[in-house]
Image 1 (spheres, rainbow, N blue to C red):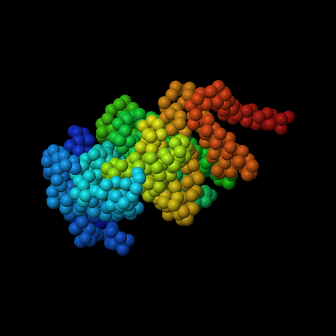
Image 2 (cartoon, rainbow, N blue to C red):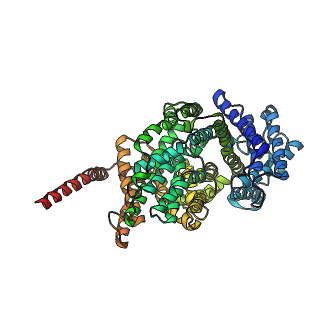
Length: 636
């Protein structure tokens, strides 16, 4: 992103802050009609893609060019048109009323500018993906079978991309960005500017820093806490990784492993309630399932993912004899307690959401509380300068998410209007022979491929457009189907060859990018198994009795522990090949059992869970008694 100065920097600041004030106003007093709300959102953010993001690596980074200014100026007209003519556009009949010449020109201009804006501000890969879908529109008439689609007219393409509000550039996905996502991005900026992210790191250091593998556990915990409110895994890496990765390296972790831990933990933050990288709000919009039901269903799987990461780094530290952070390097408990007031906005947000209040009210209240409590300490006080900086940060953080959501809407428009999604569902169903596991594997691969290189929200939207019909055709529940695709769209961030968070972490660690990606993939392996469990056993989605949920959780924790031991080659001692294969077979067996609701509810599994808990409780007691007995014997 460019670093502007002088009047240009001031003008951009004013432009951004006006948008944030608009977003806060509509979140407080009610949003406008869809086309107006989304139009204003893109009216402010699309020009910023040209002002703040260079066109090429050779473009200046301290100023924008005449071409950049020209593109930004042109991007105002298409959005101003849909805002000004909202009433007329509401009354038109889709694919019946003629598209005017002016609408054709503005529509094609909007499509072209969106593609260039996405190339600059998001990733070039997303632009290429969207272009690929546009190419399909013109190739489809020459294809056969399920991939055939009638040749679209140019006016039809412009209409569905520019004039619709169900999908396309101003569709419902952009609507989520212009409402729910925007207010939570503002909340995230307030949390960042009040140094809550630093508090998360200090808290993680205090909780886990002194134990074996402490620095890596710090990375896991702090990235999970910060990632739950962050919308982009790569941004999460840069926010927490600049501290955790050098610390891990300093205390003996290999650079590649240190970077992989940060990448995996940062990516997992997108799976962690309450915000889930804004994915929860998009999912609620697409499924009409309440936000609260979604985050409750996602919670247990996300916790298991982070347990697996903590165990993995713990066993690696034991295997390599790595120590924790010294007491002198830790923030004192007294200071942690003093700074704990920074958690009040997060607690208030969760409480209000659980109480059933709207996300708008919950986020607005959390922002207001964050503003008020900032005055408790001089270092966090929201002075006019810091408040301005916070509002500006909110706006710049929205650019990538807003354009990515609009781009995802363009893909959704093509897939739904051509029937491509249903065609792919039919193909995958036929390839799998109607057998669930092969079909799920194909959906997984499809979601990973479509999610590579993209931010979490558009990755999920594009992947569910293709994978959703397949999952529903196989008979899976709506929420299970969406969460299954969501998981793999997010985990694409740690799946080589295109794994942006891992590449960002490798740049900090000084390790090789692709090797770091494979290491992060290995660390995240439990995340690839969790969706296969919950689509077959909804107990993991908190749909069951308390006993069923507890038993399943215990079984999965044991399985996660065994997987961590296999992958690290250590489980209380170094494991040889035969021992690793044996442990792996037990881990896979427990995972298979977990995926069957009837097996989890069986008496043998309940006995196993009870035994596991008993051993966990009694083992330290036995070790202490044995130690005391040894001391007594030596004295004698």
